[in-house]
Image (cartoon, rainbow, N blue to C red; front, side, top):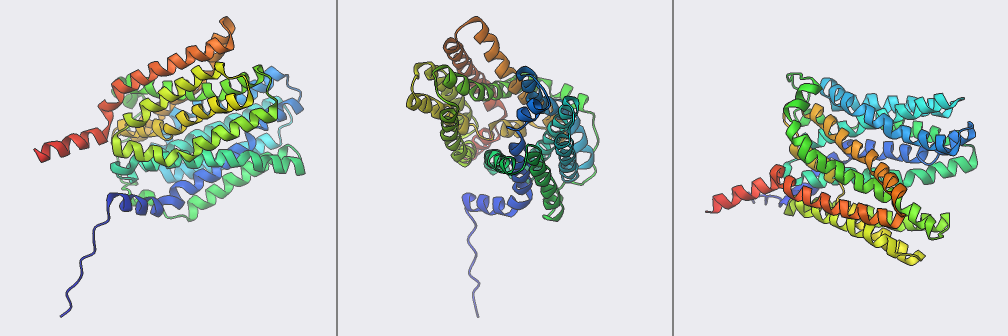
Amino acid sequence: MTVPVPTPEPTPEQGSRATLRAIALSAYGPTLLASTGTGAIAPIIAVSARELGASVGLAALLVAALGVGTLLGDLPSGALAARIGERKALLVAALVEAGGMALSATAGSLAMLFAGVVVIGLAASLFGLARQAYLTEAVPVRMRARALSTLGGVHRIGYFVGPFLGALVVATWDVAAAYVVGAGASLAAFVLVLVAPDITRRSGHGQPVRQRSVVSVLVEHRTVLLTLGVGAMWVSGARTVREALVPLWAESVGLSPSQTALVFGVSGAVDMLLFYPSGWLMDRHGRVAAAVPSMLVLGLGMALLPLSTTLVAVTAAATVLGLGNGLGAGLIMTLGADASPAEGRAQFLGGWRLCADVGRAAGPLALSGLSAIMTLGAASVALGIGAVAGAVWLRIWVPRHDPTRRAGATKDSLRE
């Protein structure tokens, strides 16, 4: 008689890798394609505006239209995803984005270009919310941060690769070709969502649930949004300040555009390499273990930047900023997932993403305002102090919503 040999239970790490592999194509493939397309057109928007006769200031406003579209789309995206489900929301987002790309490619006026870019921002908001809502429900809490930080990492990779594709096709054809690449990436994401396994069904989605308005959900959870949500604003603001501050400082100390691009490349490489370690840290040691160090390191990098006057020194300070940003990869999405309710999750995440996007818009405005009343170096130090204050705020509020902390407390009580 043959005695069956029991199959050993997978360790948590093995189980995590298996689950991430199982959902990789459906969860991350469309995000990689969409972010590559958006990355391809991001540096081209200002060029398109200038070709249509815009001044430098107006061209900058056209670039900001992408963020305007994202802000406008956050709350409606939550309502739509709750009504039709994440998979259908992804399909809608991909088609809308392709339409926005086509409108931008054929724009014969600044008004048409503005409309096309806003539509692209609206689609990006819906796309991002649908992926976050799905992963929040589909992935076990013990590996939630890794799943969401990987989502953020995949987005960064696409946004990093996209400009190279855009530059290649623009050099070969014309500026409109970058939007064609973006439209193609959106349509490819649409096809991938259609043919990939419908993992939303396995996560329990598609079950009838009581529909609630966005306003009612946000009012019910207003305390969370006014405390932890403010922390998300702080994190998002610090990140966008970094993106604006480094090129401004590099230009002020006489670095050439190519040298500035090199600085960004080194900083971005450090940033991208840390997305999975950041998720592992949050899952293993709690959300504070990544949230607080991320903000402290960002603050340190901002304080060090005014001391740098050479290419090597500016690169070192920018690398510190990249390290701080990378330590917090997936942080905002993870905190939002932790705080989101089971009922009205998509609506809540729409409000949560609005908090983050307001911070993303406020960061450069704070830099602009401070630079108007003090030197750029002093503004950088002041913003660094602000990032440290954000770390204190996160230290207070993040543990109150950290599921890993509650799980640890439960295990301790069981041991006793």
